[in-house]
Amino acid sequence: MIRVLICDDQQVVCEGLRAILSTAPQIEVVGLARDGAEALERTAATSPDVVLMDLKMPVMNGVQATREIRARFPAVRILVLTTYDADQWVFDAVRAGASGYLLKDSPGDALIAAVEGTAAGRSHLDPAVAGKLLDQISRGPPGRPDPLPGSLTEREREVLGLLGRGWGNAAIASHLRLTEGTVRNHVSAILGKLGVSDRTQAALIALRHGLA
Image (cartoon, rainbow, N blue to C red; front, side):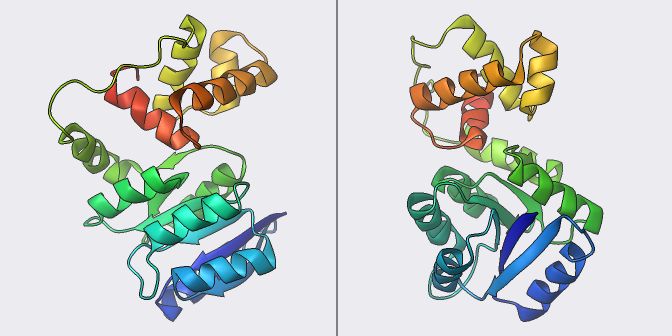
């Protein structure tokens, strides 16, 4: 069972998301929160696997809440809810530790699939706004990006490149003829060497360096 906490300051949005997710027998909505501060409290109280996080909220916004939840509850994964005009907010949320993002008006089956994938450790990058996020990265500070750590092995670079394409562990294992356990070990090593806490952040680094 996948335990989900929904955080959005619009009650009608919360109820709509809960209604959609409740149609999936493998998902249980364990709570609703109206702002980031309440999301922190509900996360502590309900131990969700995934938090669906709105970004623009009063009291504590979604970026701040994402950072706090990831720091206090590292096993909880954050799936950001966004709109077309939320580019910078999405970028900040990913840097804060979000595992991915999807649009608020995504179809029900896409929402359910995104929650399932996020709970399974995959990164969900909605293609409708992925281009804007990458454009934001490309408009970063001038000059070349910081070099990748020299300690990355050739195999780790291959895995990092596939992470940048949004591939899950099973797909990477099949493509490289490895076991999933070996891929998990590579991913763990990559995250440590890059100094990031989430495969979404690693994927963004791969894209920035042209590995994907």
